Image (cartoon, protein in one colour):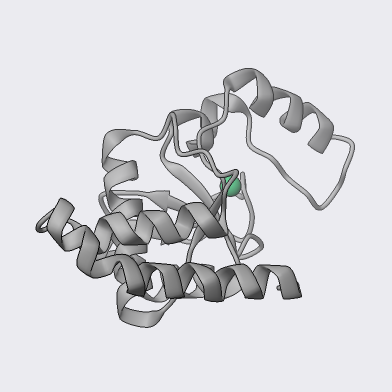
Length: 167
Ligand SMILES: [Zn+2]
């Protein structure tokens, strides 16, 4: 994390704490969620949650609120829903880069709106440890940042597109 990121993180946490009583007045019952959203907006101003399925969106925002108020973790979204054309371009490019597999749009959770690439690494670690409560699972050994909304814990694969082991 850069110094600027660290400063913004501290500022975001301080803001959320100061604003909590005010949020209680404006949004009774949702104050923790609302103030967490403010803090996240300050810390990750460019993130885009549009295109996620409603269940994925709800799971992620609930998990983030818990992570923030319980453990002081701000979890940002680097990439959520992706247009099929964007995913297809990434897929084609990946064919020339061995060791960096990218799924075809037809197989990608990002295109379906159920996949979340998160940051920073500490935030991803929190989600790996606590995500099951929200049906959010890390699905690949080689991508610490990639999580998916699934109704049941999936078998974790070594990398995207890896053939599932027969058991
Ligand atoms: Zn991903």
